[in-house]
Length: 568
Image 1 (spheres, rainbow, N blue to C red):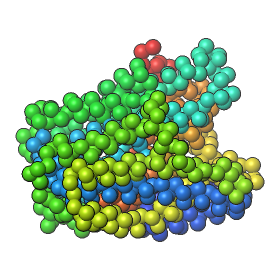
Image 2 (cartoon, rainbow, N blue to C red; image 1 turned 60 degrees about the horizontal axis):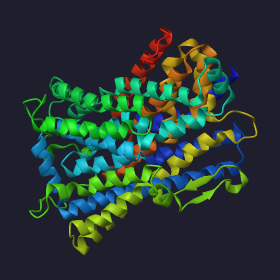
Image 3 (cartoon, one colour; image 1 turned 180 degrees about the vertical axis):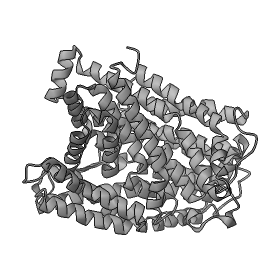
Image 4 (cartoon, rainbow, N blue to C red; image 1 turned 30 degrees about the horizontal axis):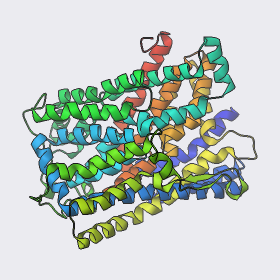
């Protein structure tokens, strides 16, 4: 009974955010400030976290918020530079040559190109790059962010060259006595057992993720088409009309991604899946393979609802330059992918060079709560570098570059205030284990409560715990760090497969990226949206529910039948 009470108290910050942001539709700035106060009060008076630890967590959160703002600034600056140079207009012309259908364009940009960026970098890069690119191509800002959030799920599980699994799950499991004893009984080495987890993550995640492009286009046509539910709900059918192509694009990513996970490991599934998918799907779209005959377009701009558009518009330079080739226009994005990939590969010297500049403290205010910031290693550095190179590549005028920079800075004002409350709130929640009450941290207490209520049916709920971790922490990697060992321990306790339940944790954490508040705020900022965070979360709840339910069902079936989900 005591565990349930503490679990409900630990749930209070999440309920606060959900009720005020999603149900009451209050602004994110107000909601996150209230949530920070609620979380700090519970930490102080119930968990007995010292004031110094709350202050240290707040400082840690502010540093992380500054890092997110740096990434947002770089993404917006690059887009503004490309719009000023006329590159966006040239890219738009090229995409129209591939397909004039907005559904096809969305799949190519956010599902495939975005997955490649996620595989190379992570850290919210796909939404930060793809959302403003879509807006510049004529998508409503709200539509661009919505589908970017939905798409940035499947690829997250192996994002940033496998960091959510290699660092997140490894940090949770490696060296733990319960894990070592179990794998010794089974006759595995840790490396062999970890490979089994990676394979299960790859297979289960790909089965679920194959339908994500279909969810994307159905969401796009349902909420941003001319045929509203009051007119018969035909807009759902407009999404389903491209179903075969969406399924084809889904498989074009998930099949090579799964094979990479099985044969090469956790580093490259998302990166290779995105590249191979682009190589397959773009020519297919050009040749009208599986594409519907009727082209789908947004309604006329003058009929758009007020909430569709952000302050970022496509109006700076809509004229394609005759002296700017399509290859030259795309070169900055190619450079982003290349530089991100080169900077993340551990066997190359670039990673070490970028990580050399660091600001760290292992114990802020003597609490044991630390910070470790490596600003040059953040994706924002790559964005800014490419923006500078683009100035020379596209032979831009200085006045246009100054205008692009000023616009990028002005976009950050409201976002900075939201993140300054949201990220510290998450860190206070996570660091509540630094207490004098001998209680586990709030996230672990909450997960313990779920496990005690679920009993033997717990595997069905395991992905939800992973998603909750991402919602709170703003990171699939941190969610895996927090909950991997907990998930493994519960699986062992109820006699379920630890490898499958741990895989469900990783899959749920990736899906939770859709509703992570800091991700939603950051993606919204790149297109100049404000006050739409609750609406965006509501729009992605259906694909999120699909992801978590199917993951839970597949995992529960695999455990119940006591069969492996892969050969070998």
